[in-house]
Amino acid sequence: MTRVRIIDRARRDQLGEGPLWSPGTQSLFWVDILGQRLNRLSLGDGAVEEWSVPEMIGWVIERRERPGFIAGLQSGFAELSLDPLRVNPIVAPERGMPDNRMNDAKADAAGRIWAGTMPVTADRPDGAFYRLDPDRSVTRVDSGYRIANGPAIAPEGDWIYHTDSGLGLIYRFPVDADGVLGKRELFVEFESGWGTPDGMTFDSDGGLWVACWGASRVLRFSPDGRPDEAIELPASQITSCAFAGDALDRMFVTSAADGVTEEHGGALFEVEAGRRGFAPHKYAG
Image 1 (cartoon, helix red, strand yellow):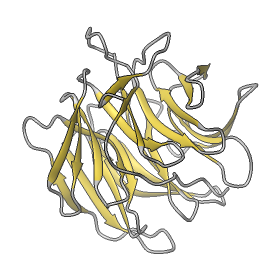
Image 2 (image 1 turned 45 degrees about the vertical axis):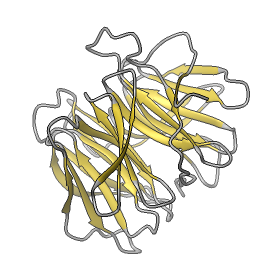
Image 3 (image 1 turned 45 degrees about the horizontal axis):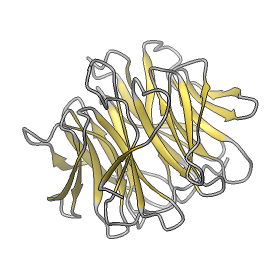
């Protein structure tokens, strides 16, 4: 395989996001937020399927004890199952803020979901960071985000990384076994030419891979916050990345076509990162 491969499919994503490896189905799932679609790529035969959903959808996370997913919709957290598609609301943490939506999320080893929200217009600090526990209770753990993005759980589970793309900042929080966050600290401030930090994932060596919106690349940051690797891509609006495959050595990268006319905007890419990742955690509720 060349270092970058474009996945063959019928249509591109207006705003691709949230790639998720599903070992049980041998598939990669991802969403098109603006297109209101959930996509699935079978790694076995390369087939791509899609489902239309009734709202903007920011992400899906698999469930640990039962089939299906928890999804982040514009209105809040919901159960989602396929074939046929069913959506059942769980809780709307921002019921009084109809102009906000959920944007990105990850589960941790304890089966909790960490999810950010943002204004649809991305022009004011009305977004927040939430924890959905297995008992379905929701806690707001941080606030003041323009574009809450890219949660990533450190390999040891003792730090959670979160981004405000609107400010070009990646933060991190120490987290204890009960899911209580310590003081937020700055991990990386993006420099001119790096683009904007978007979705993120860790590799097994502790490097943090960050999708760089507007800069046509994914950047790897060492544990001390220094950029040490880059993979260039033939699209400018790079949105997220995830490791997949039985050996977790296949990286997939999402992108967006919204607002650009470039040939490969909104494509799903497979890249040769030369690293391995971790299997994603599942929601325990």
